[in-house]
Length: 240
Length: 217
Image (cartoon, rainbow over all chains, first blue to last red; front, side, top):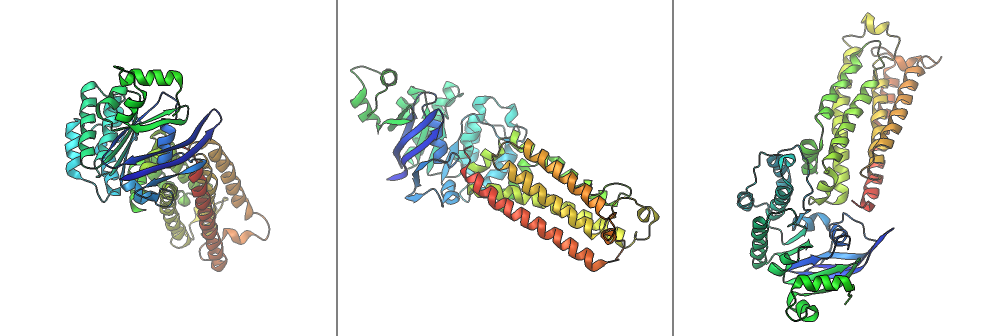
């Protein structure tokens, strides 16, 4: 079932442009959003969350436009912005105690589970955390309110290989529970490990949006790894 | 809105915003331009904007399950809450000076402005100007606040200077009334000040919501 629709998103900056970005996210699927630095991944994700105001296009969640239903829809979304840290001198537990009040669906059990899985010390402040731990704190917040869609901007950046592996396993578990997971990355092995679908953005344009199997079938040569395929595509700037 | 206000109070606010409420008691100082108290309260609020910006507060707030405009309303709500607290302290000081201390020599011989309802109304105008110039100016970018704050400082001190000077102009002596003298005029001036505060705050908030909606974070 399609639960997020991004339709003909256009955003013009003086030196960059998102050009008619369109794709869909389905429940129970993991979608990897891939593209090189500056390709438009973060602008697209920010537009999906109303942090960037698109020049045109529409974002729909759960068959409702985001505009006008922002608060209700956000309650059903989990979002993590990688290593960005909020309130560097506040204790994690104080930040969490405020955040959880915004969600009727806050799941204290899930919060404790993920907090202990990621070994997060609630008495620390973001200032005392490594970049990887900041990512984990953001992820725990995103995972603790029974979100139906997770939108994650480079969630694996800064994580050690073990934590990355654990996180990708969590994605798979959430997918099996029907959650749509959408994450941007430039680590191809993350996509290889867990993504069902691939949305590939290049120079502000969606080059292709396919299931992983179809993507490999369409673009990969014999014996070519996904990473080699992506490097070749990016070098040739293929637009499907 | 209760949750967003709680977030403002516990995460975004600087402790100085709360401490500087006490400057409302400057209305008890004789021989001092008492309206500077309103300026210092605004200075305390400015500290909250500064620390909130350092903490990525605006982006954090936008990601919470609230409409983007509610982030703006939350800020205004917090600012107004601090201003109302300071106003209540000032009002307490004014009532003390109008009643129990109305015959006090230090206040009677005070060359500067007397703490009366006119002063209280003018403090409301200063708070309204802070909301209009500074808070409204901040939400044009949700990042830059130096220019709006400098503009506010200049405007604020012009208002303080004017308020201090007015009662020296022949015919306007009543503005400096002591005790319950000219109470009707005093109450009208207070009501006018409150009305200006409400109008400036409401219009500024509405405009800030519209501007903030279009800002890219």
